[in-house]
Length: 398
Ligand SMILES: Cc1cc2nc3c(=O)[nH]c(=O)nc-3n(C[C@H](O)[C@H](O)[C@H](O)COP(=O)(O)OP(=O)(O)OC[C@H]3O[C@@H](n4cnc5c(N)ncnc54)[C@H](O)[C@@H]3O)c2cc1C
Image (tube, rainbow, N blue to C red; front, side):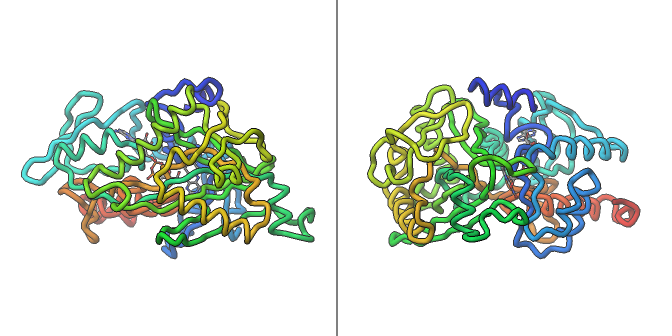
């Protein structure tokens, strides 16, 4: 998977089955590894301990903003895999869930790589990008609903600039780590604009999973020593933007990604200085050098979004410039459309099942959004499954 992702970043040749979103460790494997969460669930500490036991730095147990870094995940995920195997688990690489069979509202079988197998209990943790699987599972009878999500861009500034803006006289203090920021604004059309998943000393990365669709995201290595800081700059969208149909949100998301791809063949990403985006002119030069590979093309990002989204982004940027003078010198890279799932799979609060036998879990279920909340959600589904099938076994297991 590492090789496939590196190949994509170097050449723009995407493997739709093995990329930043799909493969062992999921999107988390190439994530930035910020473990901050607003959840106060007691499982948070347990999960941080688990990550530490599998090789994450002990700092995550005490830091206010725990961070792992993309480079550290590979070993952690391999260690978790070994533990699963030791405990008797089986891992089938290259296994693709294609269909499910639901009879009398109850799961009876799953189709993996074209072969049907009987199945009574399925933890369905597809992440937020498996749109083809979601569409098929809906056809097979799984209940789903659409939910609001966000669209926008990544914005980059030199980390030196962010340090100056946030730390002032302490900008060069060696005791401090690279500065972070969070900015929010409300546009007069009622849309919220906010920065999200800020990566100090990080990189903007190509994280497409579908051919012909361009998606960007951000990450940093454990040392956060990159020249630039990046952050998602997002606007909330809902049914009034894309329509009431179940898959209207997904289609809207895909349309923006296709438009971005059309501007930038071979997965080069469209870029624009924020100040030029406000003026609607293609940038002749950029103040902040973009970090995105496999390369960038100058474009007017206004052409990618609806008037409402552009209006909100414009107002948000002007507000952020007032708060952080110089913010408009940042480079915007399009498009960031996969900050959360466009679909929710409803489930019972107690049994955690949707349709009988199906445990929708993690980010793709629509109930989680990030590493920690997805992990908490997964553990809770696993425990609900154990309650049902082996209630006595829980005290003997990890
Ligand atoms: C670049 C990047 C940076 C991020 N940074 C952060 C961060 O700093 N902090 C944070 O909290 N979150 C971050 N995230 C988000 C975080 O990674 C996700 O919220 C989290 O991984 C969701 O976990 P999940 O297990 O629910 O889904 P995923 O991690 O998306 O895993 C889904 C899995 O399902 C598999 N799958 C999909 N379809 C099928 C099928 N049909 N058959 C079989 N398997 C299938 C996929 O291959 C994948 O392994 C980042 C994401 C990205 C892409």
